Image (tube, rainbow, N blue to C red; front, top):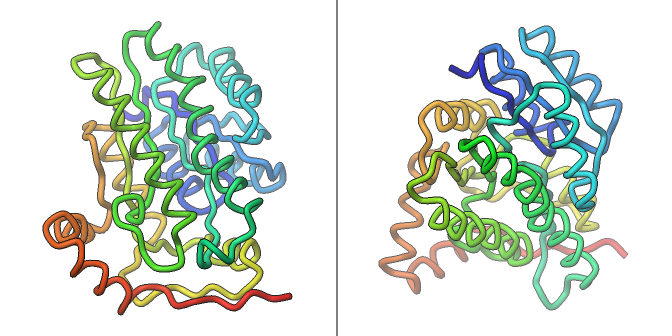
Length: 266
């Protein structure tokens, strides 16, 4: 049961990370939460306690390998084990690849991919020693099928998937599970942050959306019954199948209904 689990979550101060923390806390789980914003992190920790869970807030940066090692160390010191690590921290930037500053691509890679790598690298030795564990990586549907003007972000989400699939095959037959989550557009501050990072107002595309709570519920179910992949918006799996069967047609489809070019502020 979730009530007996010790769970670490990166990017837990808002959005999906916060929703997952509260969802699991309601089941009585002990939740170690990591983010850079100490004030927001303290608020989430208080909400976890009110929801019936135990909270361990850690102010840290997923782009720093030593921070992720310390996050896991403190979790072990407090709770004596770690059952699940949820790699959730991430952000997006919109724009054409040849118009995006290269430093933004590096920042995306540092947070979205290396942040996942460092958290996984810190947790896996603990899982191996315990003989069990669960790594949950929050990717995106654009980690399965790229969409217009999201190429840089999509590339980091594909990178997460490649890492997860390799780990999953390495760990096959063990009691260490790897799950990748593929949300569609989610109702969080993600688009506000993306607008800030992009330097232009980035609006939602015309596709489907879901709430952070829907994603959290899907993750909670996957923790209870581990599966390789989770599609919180079930119909989005159809896009993956369509892309595999007819990639050229899919190109035209996502161009028609996908994101439009953005004009950056000078």
